Length: 309
Image 1 (cartoon, helix red, strand yellow):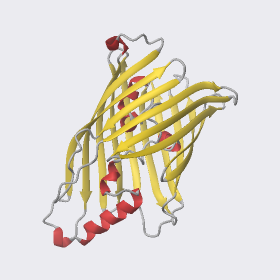
Image 2 (tube, helix red, strand yellow; image 1 turned 135 degrees about the vertical axis):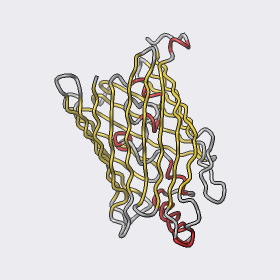
Image 3 (cartoon, one colour; image 1 turned 90 degrees about the horizontal axis):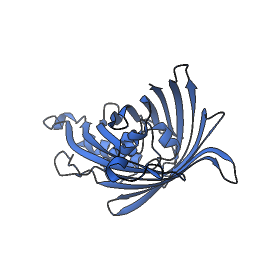
Image 4 (tube, one colour; image 1 turned 90 degrees about the vertical axis):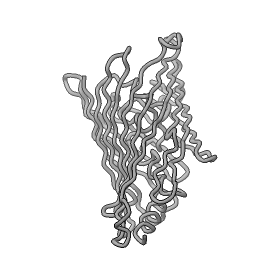
């Protein structure tokens, strides 16, 4: 079991959590969201929605595909760990909603790998609630998730299965008010699925409340296309937070982002290229500097997103 303990110790250090199952927490995916410190629950409106608040895909007006790659904790000798993400959103129609698929992965070569597959659906629900969408747009969604972890055991433990999977789900609600206020709620890993090998180890249910604000021109300071989000995360009886800011300049082509959480501070930017048929290519970059891992120079994330009709 030496390799098992090595893998667990290694990933516990890197994700700064009490159990290795923090590898399934939505922390290392979605470059635009990462530039905002992972605070995205109340303002999500792109192909990162399956990770943060599935209700957000109902606000996607174009088909979208995003692909992310990364290198985590650069500067640590002998350490190679990466996070990858693929997300796709397909809006059907306002009355039918949107569907999504997403895959996220965190791993180290030849040691361990943690994958999550998401299949989601969301739609606007003003017609169901009877609330006038002039004042607030309401959307709700459901995400079905399959979690899979794989560990390469030592020869002495080759009789053990090297993979374990479990099915669970997320739900999300999003409210977008006319005055710029945004409220979001996401409950993740609803069933607290068991994904342990020899003993029961459950992925904890996580409830996130997001409070956001959007303004085309922030009053008094005149910051254009301004977005702010505060996420309050309730997990295992503890409260965590994430805070993020975003602004778009140069005719809304260049996005500038800043964010943070207890363990790290983040910055990011993105640039949007528009084509004649209203399709867009977006290049996003984010950098995260951890507070608790002094030997690391930080983590780098880059994504390409394509939106089209």
